[in-house]
Length: 405
Image (cartoon, rainbow, N blue to C red; front, side):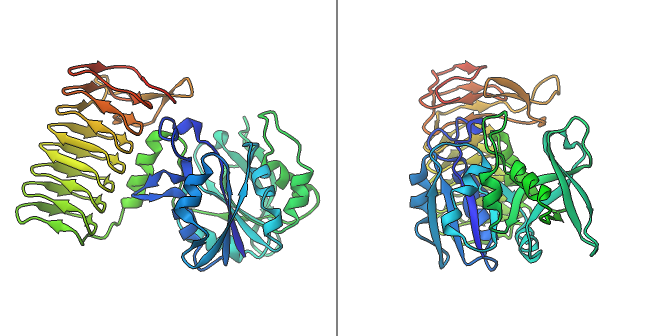
């Protein structure tokens, strides 16, 4: 059995973090989402087929031709025309039952085993309070005590159930015939749910695997924070790097080999400090936070519940809360991030031109790779700085700025 992993999309809702990389390569708890999905398949599959498109070279360079001893093949999806189109591109690489998984979700690994064990076409599902924003699955009893799908309806006004499609499947090769018969939807895509409806109309059984564990669709910037918090639950403390004598580690803190925590630093987990990172002296880092590879967190800097990606720097006298900071971003001394509205309403953020309620009472900023702030910059809650953005010393930034937003 192979795993076909769809990793071709641009991830426009995740901008500006995806301006220079595909969304599945964004890190959750320090590991790219794509790698997490592939790791979940260990022990179940004998190889992988990655469907790539947007900035495919980044994925090829990271994964290579082999992943943990198993072969990796690649197919290109030049135009992002939907999940059915993406899975269909893999037909020449699979001739038996296979898994089909999105490369930008976070879930419990046992879900892969549950899909594989059904022995037939199967769809992963979960019960939610409000199913109207999902594909909703109708079911009945297959006669053997296991539910089977009877319908799949995208974002219905009157849902037939509260059981929603998680975008993880096991397919028999017959799915490729259904994909060939799938027309373009009103969204201009070939939807895999339409292909599944075709299977159902042909009386091909589709088993339903109901999942009651962790599953996160990481589609917007602040959801990286949600996923990181979930992944750091149960983090095992470990120290492989250098922790100076007067530094304090409290709770679940992982210091990787090659990382350094200097005297006076206080680190309160769950926190991961990646290889090459340098924290302190006199810094305060608290969870759930990932200090990425080669990141610098300097004197009198506080980082709270944030993700600082590779090579980012907050060198002096700064506060970073509930934020995502891109690669090689540099925060000038005294940069302060606001992460709470005074009216106690949820923080809102612009996504593809729409002002969206993030559902988070505390949310700071999202900074693209290479952003630079001048000394004593203040950044308002929910602000994004895109490619090439810079701030002047003493500036208060109240609105998004930069390219690729």
